[in-house]
Image 1 (tube, rainbow, N blue to C red):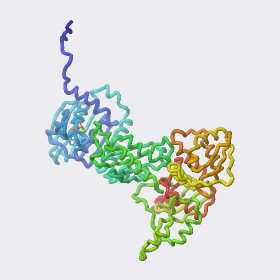
Image 2: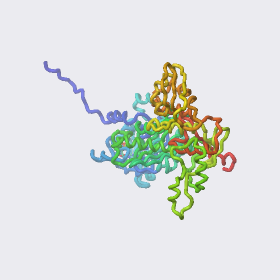
Image 3: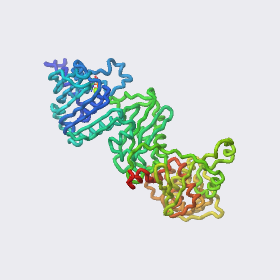
Image 4: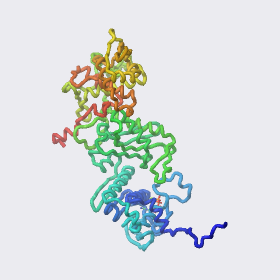
Length: 589
Ligand SMILES: Nc1ncnc2c1ncn2[C@@H]1O[C@H](COP(=O)(O)OP(=O)(O)OP(=O)(O)O)[C@@H](O)[C@H]1O
Ligand SMILES: [Mg+2]
C-alpha cells in the first residue's frame, strides 16, 4: 500500500531569528556566560583595560567597556550576524587558533535574547552605535568615542520566558559573574580589570606580574600571603604559582585554578597530581587550594579539543603530571612551608637558601659526633678527604649553617631564621624524620637492626595479635625479627635501631594497639600507615630533655627530610613568627 501523501509540508527551514534563539541556548545559559563571552571578545580585541558593570546580578543589565581594536561601522553591524567572525576564514584556520572566540556566534546569540547596544570605534572619534533587540537591528548611528568597544546587554531573556524562569537570584548570578572574572583575571594578569555590581565596586585589579599579586588584589593580601610559592622546571615543563600550606588546608573553601600555556583549563588529572604532592602532610580527603600555571612546549599540547577550550590534550600526560607533583612537593619541602603566627600580608620575600658559613672543622666534627641521636642519612660533616682537597689559598671549608638552638618546655626547639623566629615541635619533627626513614626502609629494605641478647617475650590480646599477623612482613622489613610463639605470644629476637633512646617493647606494643580497629585502612597504603604509626611511637616525646648535640642533629635530620614542615598527621612541625609580624606588634610599622 502506498504511503499517504502529506498534504502540507511538515519540514521547513527555521527563520534565522528562531535559529539564533535556539543557538543562544547553547552559548548563553545565564548572565555569567554572557559576561564570559563579552570578556573573551574584549581580550581577543587586544584590550589592556576592561570595565564591567552589572545590575541585579546581570539580569537587568551587563555592560562591558574595553580599549581594544574596536570595529568599523560595517564590522559593527556584521558582528551581530550569526557565523560572523574576524577570527577564522577557513576550516583549516581552526588548527592552532589562538583567540578565545572563533565560532562567530556569541554576539548574535546574545543579541537574539536581549536588548543590545554596541558602541565601538576603531580610531578615536570615528564611532558607531548599533542598537538591536531580539536579534533585529533597530538603528545604526555615528557617534564620537575613544577607541574600543562598549557592549550593553539589557533584560536578558526578556523574550525567552522559559529561560528567564531558570535564572537564580541576583546574589547567586552576581557571584557566578565574579567567578568568571576571577578566573579570567588570574589568566590574563596583564589586563587591568574593574567590576561593579549595582554601582558598588566589587573588584579593582591593577595589572599584576605574578599570580600571587593578582590573588592578593582579588582575595586580599592575607589570603595571598599564606600561600607558598611553586616554581620548578622539569624537562620542557615549567610549573609555577602558589599553593596552600598543608596546615591551612581544609580550614576554608578550597579553590583550584589551573592554566596551561596561558589558558584557564579544567584538568582533574593535573589537579590530582598536585594534590598527591600533599600525601603524608594532610589527612586523606582534605583538598588543598591550588593556583598553578603550567607551561609546556606548544607541540606537546592540543588546546582546541574542547569547544570552550576548557580542556586540553597532552602528548605526554604522565610527564606533565609528574612535573606538577614534583614542583608542588618541592614547594612544600621547605622550612617556610610551616604556618605562621598572626597575619602575614604578602610582601615579596625571597626564600632563603641555607647560608654557607666558615667553621672550625675540628669543633664541628666533635659536636656532630658527640650525640648521634638523630643522625641523618648523610651527616653534614666535611670529610677528611674533602678538607684535604681544599686548595691552599681558599678559606676554611664551607658547610651548611645550623643556627643556635634552644629548647623550650622540653618540647620545642627555637631558633632564628631569615624570616623570623621559628619553633619546632620536637616530637612532630622527629616523627617526620623517622617516617621518611622508615618509608625508605620499607621501599628499599636496608634498616640495620640489632640482635637482642635476651629475646623479648610479648603477650598480646587477640586484636593486637591479628594486627601483627596482618603487618608481619612490614615489621620484618623495618628490622624486627619476630617469631610467633603459640597463641598470641611473640618472641622478639631483633629490633630496629632508629636512635639510642628507642624503646622497642613500648613501640611495638603501642604500634600494635594503634593498628587494631584501623579505620584509616584504605585511605593510606598499609605500609604508609605502619611507617607513620611506628614513627609516632618511636619518636622522642614532649618532655624529653635534649642535649645541644641532640637538638642540632634533630635540626639537621629534619632539614634533610623532603617535607620538614609537616608531621604525618596533617599538623605542622614548624611554626614561625615573622619579623614582619614582630615589627607590627612593636609598632615599628
Ligand atoms: N569587544 C570587541 N572588540 C572588537 N571586536 C569585537 C568585539 N567583540 C566582537 N568583536 C568582533 O565581532 C566578531 C563576532 O564576535 P562573536 O563573539 O560573536 O564571535 P567570535 O568571537 O568570532 O566567536 P565566538 O562565537 O566563538 O565568540 C568577532 O569575530 C570580532 O571581530
Ligand atoms: Mg566571541
